[in-house]
Every structure is written in C-alpha cells, then in structure tokens.
Length: 158
Image 1 (cartoon, rainbow, N blue to C red):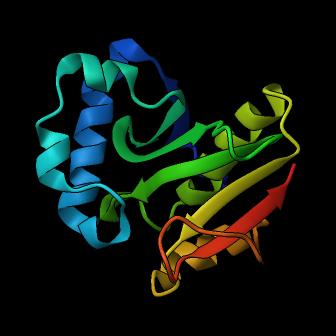
Image 2: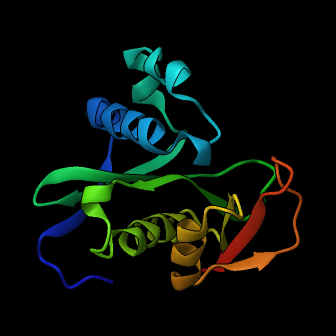
C-alpha cells in the first residue's frame, strides 16, 4: 500500500467511458506487446462499447488527480468461484507510487464482494515488472491452462 496522499484509486462506471478509453489506448500505445488487444481495434470502439467494457468492474489510478493507471475485474464462466484481473497498466508517470498494489487491492475487494474465493490472472513471463508487481501483491504461479501459450497463470487467495 502507498501512504502517498497524491494517489488514489476510483471505480469507473459507464459514464466514465472517456477515462476508460483514454487509459486503455494509452496502455496499448505505450505497451501493446503486453496486452491481448491492439490499439487499432480499441481505437475503433464506439462510445457504447466503451461504456459496456468490461463486463465486470473497472478502476482507475490517479496521481495528483490525473488518471495514470487502469485495471479491470471480470467473472468468466470458466473460472467458477474466481474473478479474473485483466488489463492492468500503470503509465510511466504513475510508476513508483504503489499504484499497482492499490489497483490489485481494488479488484480484490470487488471480487470479495462478488463472493469469489480467488483472484486469477494471466501474464507474459517476459513482462518482468508486471510479474514482480503481482508477486508483491500476493499472487503465486499456479498450474492452469492459459489462453495464450507461454503465459503464466497466477492466483491470489482472497
């Protein structure tokens, strides 16, 4: 956790679609290699698609009231009793302030409210900074099928 009073994390609703779009596109522009989507497809989404994304919860991280990070939590059918953390990204301006941990905490709290027992994610093994951040937050690697060959599955007991 960060004790830096310059940072905060807030839940985003459909009315915050512009913030979701801005942060997701910034993530894809800066670090597209770490995500399942691509910039061109995401940039072409309609306002309604941004309002509806994701089918779960989304949180933004702020530094000095400016949005600098994003994460989402979803409840995929194939993960019975678990939530999945997706689309996590903290921009360079927000790094080093504990925002990754705060974003994980926000999704974990949401998952608990949903009655989940675990929080699951998949990450590329060569995305070392993300792997370190997830481990610091309590995630551990697990043997599980992954959508993309070579990815690492990680789980956090809630």
